[in-house]
Image 1 (tube, one colour):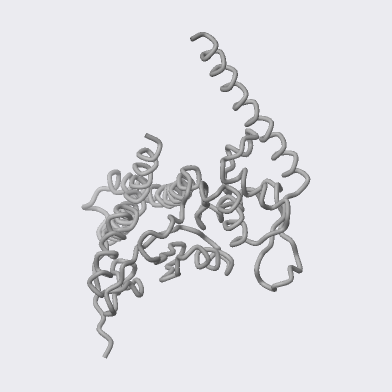
Image 2: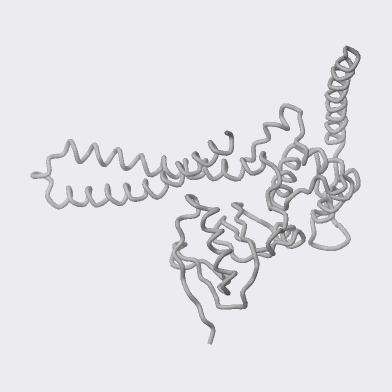
Length: 113
Length: 178
């Protein structure tokens, strides 16, 4: 079904990155969107279609799971799995490295002036 | 009495943004999209107050209630669904339903593969019937030859209606990747 090329290679899109993060605490769809907007100061807002697609991919890869018996009935609530947490941590490392590389290069540039 | 009018669409696979922009313009003149009629070839509009709205389209098979709720929460109200096509409406300036390229690519890629599959199913009888017609002499076949010809024409039409959208989605993906 839904192809998860980026996920398979172990990289997360920005949206998937923030969705995994938001689901460290169980949330349903709308609250995921709101949470991401809040934590990024409105810099990233995930559209409903993109959110739906990404949730499905994360579910397929078992990085998140659906919580049964959520309090408000029919609304689906999701939470990040152990596997998802591992992926998120790996991604944080990857992104930290990327920042570090750039900082190193930029610092050298400044030192050379 | 309610005033209704019908507007021909250009085939959503071919001019999604053009058609949606046209609908937005019509809404500003007080014609709001209400449904899709005549086998998907026409938009059905109703007379209302002029509204400053935009439309968006998504393809999705087997949607749950959650899906529409998510759109609603983001400001997009559901207008109409036909098979796996869903059209939404929101006040102009509402944030887009697709916020990244990866998921947008997937939207069209899924459709491309779907129509690719249909087109292959149409292509097989087109080729087979074409070969039969070529080999079989028209003079000796009589009625059956004509039946074959009729079937061939039906299959050819099916191929056009599946192959063209397939190419349209291919083109869209190619443009997205540029």
